[in-house]
Length: 123
Image (cartoon, rainbow, N blue to C red):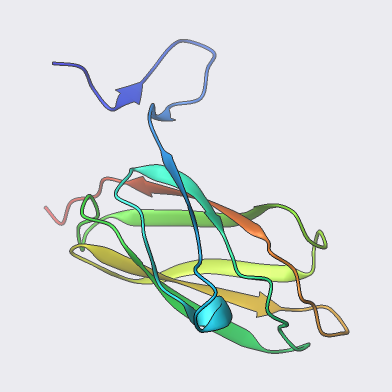
């Protein structure tokens, strides 16, 4: 049985498969998405986010367990260094991502977030 992880000396270790999803333009940057993959890219809506404001949205993902660790970052598009991004509220089947605008002005950018869900255990 093939593993979803690949390991080769001198190479990064992580999920060998992933996916992509784009937020629907129904309620802006707070719109939840579904992506059932161990890693992937989420393209956010381009609604404006005021300076000093944060927004959270839910990622529904059947591969995620409450004991997992989800790492997320601002991967591309938009103003580099203008956003703080974190995963939180990790539960069986979902997690949340919070994006904060730390720039000095309002930004209306469809930023791309990269994430990876790492398997964890409580024992």
